[in-house]
Image (tube, helix red, strand yellow):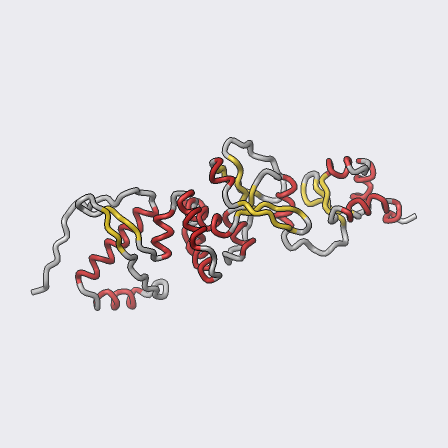
Length: 274
C-alpha cells in the first residue's frame, strides 16, 4: 500500500479546507497526531511554519505569508507596506509581514514568516478593516485609504518615500478622496496629506488669524541635477524664492506634527542688487 493511499481520508480533510491546516485544527477534524506526523514523513504535507501544514502537490501560493499570518494571528490586521502590496500601491516587495494589533495586545510568537507588529489605539485599529480571500483563507486587510493614512502616520518608521509613492499610486487609481481625508483626520495626518494632495488648507497668520493658502506646485528635476535646479531658481524673482522657502518650512513643520507654524527668529528683508 502506498503512503498516499494510507492517508487517503486525512488528505480528503486537508482538501476540504483548501489544503491548509493548523495542527490544532487537524486534530479537531479527526486527524490523529500520529497520522499527521506520518503524512509529514511521507512528504504528503509540507510545513509552512510551526504548527501549520499545507498539502503537498498543490499549486504555489500567490500570497503564502498573508495566509500563514492570518491563521496564526487571527486578531491582527495586515497593514502598511504589506497592505500597500496587497492593494497594488507600492513597488516595494515586503521582506516581512506588517501587522496591526490592538493597543495592549500581547506580541504573538511566530517562527515564520518574519512579522513586524504595530500597536494602534482602539479607534485607529477598528477603522477601515476589509476581509479578503487569500488562498482560501480569510485575511483582514486595511482598505487603501486607511493604509495610505497609516503610512503617513508611521512615515518616520517606514520612510516618507513609501508614503509618497503610495499616495501617488492611489491618485492614479482614482480612489475615494473623501475616505482618505476621513482616515487622515483619524490618524492626525490631515495637514501633511493635504500638502501632498495640493489642497487649500488653513494655516495661522502672523496676526493670529487663519488664512487659506494654496500649496505651491512642486517642480521635479532629475536627482542630483543641481545645475537644472539652480538655473530654475535664478530665473525666479526674490519674492518667489522667499515664498518657496516659506512653503518648504510649512511642509517640514507639518510633517513633524506641529499644530502651528513657528515664527522665524529673524525678519527677511528683500533688497535689490546695486
